[in-house]
Image (cartoon, one colour):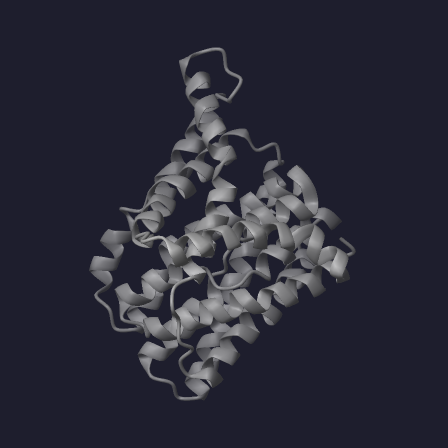
Length: 305
């Protein structure tokens, strides 16, 4: 178990630690880094991955389906639970944000790359892209659960770059362009590809910076429920979906690992936008991220990494 932690998660922890120390000891405005991540890093990674990915179309569809199934199944489960426990609309929205959307980007991608190599990384990218599209759309429903103005949320969704990055990537792929095309488009793609190589470590640094912010855990009982669903129930659903869709062993391991990731940090931004108990969401993000070091280590041991 210690070997798995040192080989897979410890390198990520080291890079995250660098970001943590930067934020602790330097007057860094993390909002600027969050904006860079949302409007530059993630779109670039989505775009170049779609252009150069070598996975078959059938596998892309099935991996994306697992991402959708996990997100929707957990959403239904969480909503039913909040109705049963009679939580108010804002708590319902907050818990949906905590449980449905996982950190498949700046945590899941490097973990998959280290654990399963480049083939695993490509599959993790497909899961990440599907998750990014879900975040850009399903948060509208979450916003309405918190009684937010859904029209303003809808306008915000269509301003988010990952959607257009995916459409542009699909268009260039359909036209037959790739990073090796001997023309100006190929040269442009080669430049974006070089830039994309530095994105995973930058995302890990950003994750460390986000963890360095002072956070107080609010409503520990509800937080525990959300973290339990996110870290333990989610991978079980992913495994079941992978079996039903007959994914190969490597792909199954990747989608289960991605589904096991803690709550995505950008859910804090959505919680603030939707007035969905942002302090509660922030505390849940930090708790799930810290506990994931244990749960992911156990999961990787079970998967024989």
